[in-house]
Length: 360
Ligand SMILES: *Cc1c(COP(=O)(O)O)cnc(C)c1O
Image 1 (cartoon, protein in one colour):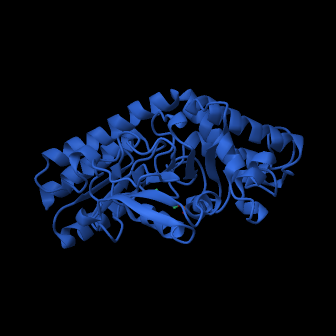
Image 2: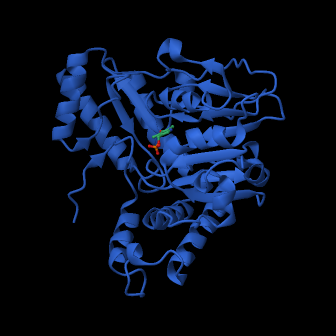
């Protein structure tokens, strides 16, 4: 049964086929329970086992230290844009934001509602086509926030930002690259990611937060907006997104059997490498991100001629290459090749690009 096409969507995005097949079967009956995965009580044994496995696999594959909590929340990464400052940024405090794209800008906007938000760097001058190397931190920020992969612009931090006051904690929006490579959790206070790019369906957000921050968050917020509420109830204060947690658990199993995060990195470097090599040697296409900032997850490119870009996207669509249109703020094309995107799909795209180049 495969009428599946090459799906380059930036999110929600491609998931491992084996995961989808297993989920399909379990929609009717989770294991031999006779009750589908979406029909189980979140407090019953079968689903609690799913949630526990999701957490323990998450800890295992990302090597998460014991003094961090793993939470499954709702509201997407966008909810974290607000939840972080509302919990940690007082009126008289400053938080630093690294502005490397429009998601980072949206996070900045929320912080301004609560305290002072300081822009420690920005690549907006070049339409976010690079990750700045010079940072201009404030003296004593409460935290430093960055988006490690910039989905729209196809850029990615190679390493965590450094050089800020050591009293500050680092907050990472890892939505579009979570678990695509090893991650040093201990360098961060909070890591969050909406699931729909690398981990599962939309509707569940993975949050990894250090214990002392769970305790330090504001107590003057409604329960759902306090991390301690969710940490204290194993993410089951209210009904959690059960299907999303289940699917994430299956994706974690898939990551584990495919070499863990090191395995993901090897595969992702290979896939993106093929595409960038081809782009660099082509006389038609140009990659839009600067060389040292290129993303392994979202490969953005143009022909330099908007009509040709439009023809490319149209012909690609007709041949079963879906969702290659770049974000409107960059134009051109974007191939999102997250963890689950197969190498064969990258090779097929390159073949199509060659054909198009020959005919253009
Ligand atoms: C997609 C994305 C978001 C938005 O996520 P939602 O779950 O839709 O709120 C935030 N940050 C980054 C880096 C993203 O790629």
